[in-house]
Length: 121
Image 1 (cartoon, rainbow, N blue to C red):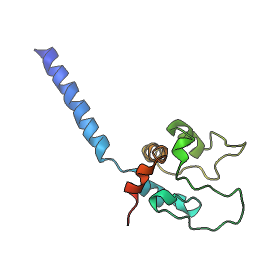
Image 2: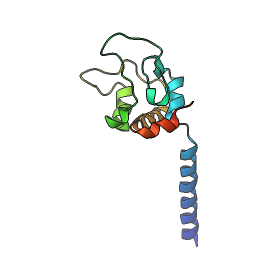
Image 3: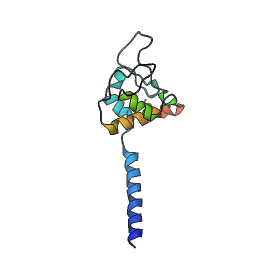
Image 4: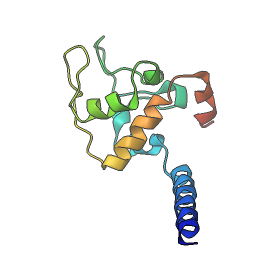
């Protein structure tokens, strides 16, 4: 009987955790709050960078970043623990690990035409 009770408790904890995962913030509000849009655009979801750079090698639009990198790489990149073409990200991410994980997962999702549903009118 105790085994059944413990199995039920474990099952319920997974269900609750899954529901909590569904309720978590997506990465767009984190991207905006952490001012990532100062340098980066994500035109696919209606985010246009605040600065204008005439340099050809300036910060890229991230609309399709999920086609090039996975969340593990993005987390390391934003923590300045990974490089792209021998360069590290300009700023180290200043939020919590949870925010960083959510942001990275959201950025990875930026890779298809389904992004149009995320854009606000």
